[in-house]
Amino acid sequence: MKQGESKTVVVVHGGAGGSRADDDGCVAAAREGLADMEKGALAAATAAVAALENDGRYNAGSGSVLCLDGTTIEMDAAVMDSSGKLGAVACIQRVRNPVLVARAVADTPHWLLAGEGAERFARIAGFAACYHVSERARRKHEALLGKLAGPDAVLPNVANAAFSHYWNYAAPHDFGTEDGCDTVGAVARDGAGGFAVACSTGGSAPSLLGRVGDTPIIGSGFYAGKLGAVAVTGIGEHIVRRLLAHTVYQWLAQGMPMNEALEAGVALFPREIDIGIIAVTCGESGARSNKDMPRAEAAA
Ligand code: ASP
Image (cartoon, rainbow, N blue to C red):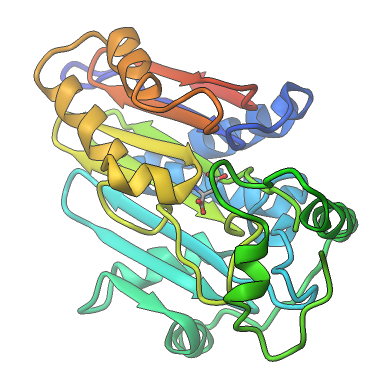
């Protein structure tokens, strides 16, 4: 390390409520991020998330969950760094790596593109059309339909019947829903003390068509500033109400120790709401969740 350089680090997560058996994909992704670190924290965080999107075991990119109609896949992703680079996509369909499209949006006059416009932008930016339903997504969808038909609420405090009542897909509904929550995210600190965050999700299931969670919303699912970077995971509808990523960032910026800030962030939510947080500052890095959450950290 040269004088004036800080230790580089990448922390990644594979989604609150995911299995620690999937930590190995996070380890590989964190290493991929670190391998791109010479291009800076933004490149590192983005590369780590792209690796998780390609893995297929996480609810992002090629592993994204199916929407309730059993056909549509809508994905959200975002990137941000401490120099002010900011890009996001919401409800984007038919792309392999939403996080790379979000990174491309950061070079446009806008910060967030949604729906058809986002997909058309992706084509213009050179991203090929891609529609991939993983076997895992298919199985989860089947299981979800079964649970929606049952008496137990699939989402905490939400009646299963709400999804048939407000059904807005072109195809008629046929369930009685699956709960899916395995978004991916990465935070990075580069050798020059720059910070970045990237995150990507296939959304939460069950959801209506056009639903956007916290993942592409600045301050909710992600935040990066001069003093650090934060990515969160869990049920977006609950996360946005607490502006969780920015809240934790501010605590860290005020000097709260990493462990305390992460604990306090998780403690904002009742136990039945899956929540996970990863963060990095100039001196610390960490991850915390109230359920299992695949994760890994790589440093050099
Ligand atoms: N936060 C994501 C969403 O609500 C889901 C997740 O983190 O698993 O879309």
